[in-house]
Length: 122
Image 1 (tube, rainbow, N blue to C red):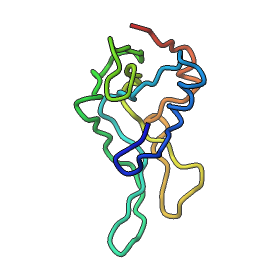
Image 2: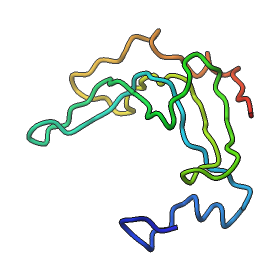
Image 3: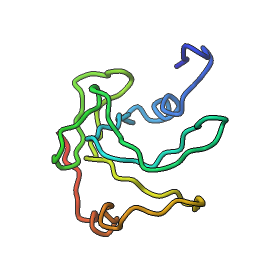
Image 4: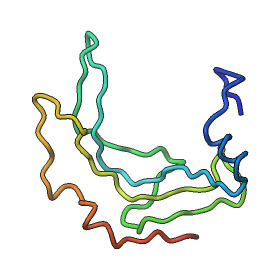
């Protein structure tokens, strides 16, 4: 509860934990991949496209592993564990942007291809 920039800030996770102490907070863990992102370029112009997604060492996962949840022995950095999702792949924005073409279909795993995956708890 509270942050360096606002001592009165109450995050949603805090409110959920107050409502139900069984709530667990998981940090996203992933392997290097790609993502769709928009950043401000020179003169405030928006530049969008597929960029490298490189996790920080704290949340980096091992490539090729099955998606899973790893719980910590105790609360760490405000999280109860890690949700490992594998390598990130780009998803085009819901609204089309002029001048951008979607990535090849084989570069992205569709939800139907992914429907049989099960998360493993450790």
